[in-house]
Length: 493
Image (tube, rainbow, N blue to C red; front, top):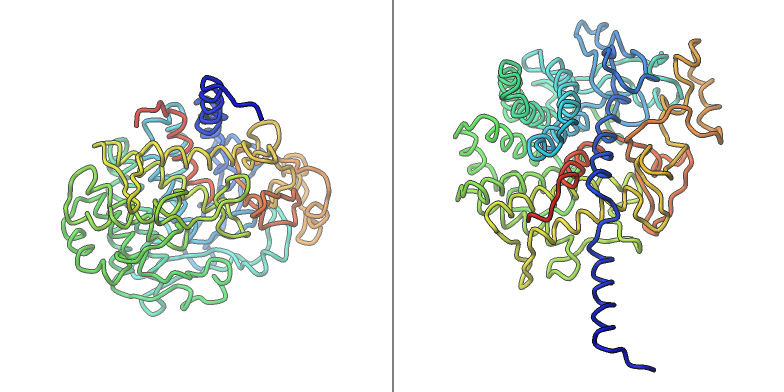
């Protein structure tokens, strides 16, 4: 075998290094992905659509939601490809949209207004849901019956039952997440709309008090209505700590600092968790509170920095605490059902934590391994790039981004003819011909990030394959922040 010269070896090493560290996308591509990821939320809107609606194949829907219960629950978002409004994932979606704006709004430029509109659409609905003291409305729609139909939201005639938690039937998880969403949204609008911001924060405090005083899981109170769809598998303790953290952040009220210190140990402050989702908030809370230590040197929160490090280290190959699983193509893999939700939340936390570390030149230590902010950014970018098409299938898992993306997504409004193209009603059972059709969806749900490929990087573009082909608001929401970060990233960390 011929020996390579040292110059040739250096050249090959350099090429290999560049292939690993150079992104497949330019800042303008990330900005395009940012714009599309926000636009997606317009396709999920319920209620009367504004004149500014850009996805104009959608129409008004759910205009009488809550009326039979003498409450106004018009508005909000459909969670995924169906026509139900689930409170827990909607609140988490709103929290993550707000956090995206709080951390990376300065990088959104011409998309900042649209991002704030997306936050407001969710927050407006949550204000309605929390309007009755001692009660929180947490769902509109009967999921089992809804899932037996394939119809447009504009046509739906399935029962629009309303479900709530109360002092007698508590739901600390969904209530504390709602409080977190309202508090985070209040920060977003603090300067641009102070009266609205004040209302959001005031309501957040009321809802949190309700969640904390009347403790219990909404899964126990509502059972088959919310399970198995959005069961609170992690319990409600993580949401109480998460909600308190956001109200502390929004209000500056020291009593919430005291609450976190006094209750943290029984609410999961000392528990390490290696996923972040609509259900489990522990990792997000650690990163959020670590910011106060890293940027403001609030010594009481140093412990959260240690636990945030543990979370971060679990994703870094070669680190002492590394335990994440990746597909052969490099995608973080947690589960076969809607895996990309974990990819987008993790990517968000990685870039947010990198931002906090970079502020004062701090580092993460993973045992004997030192991890810099740049390394976290590199890991996050690999995940974002994979979603956008830098993967073995060269498939973008964001609808409408790039030249190759799924055409048969599991989404009722997207897969059925629009109300403008087909004004007459399409009934519950009549819609199944479109579910089972081999034709591409007639309405492109631009920006929708789907569940994504399996552990072997394989993806089946089939409308019935909901585990892989269904989008969801809580997949997109954290991606908004990550895309904004990379649209302005200039190797400054």
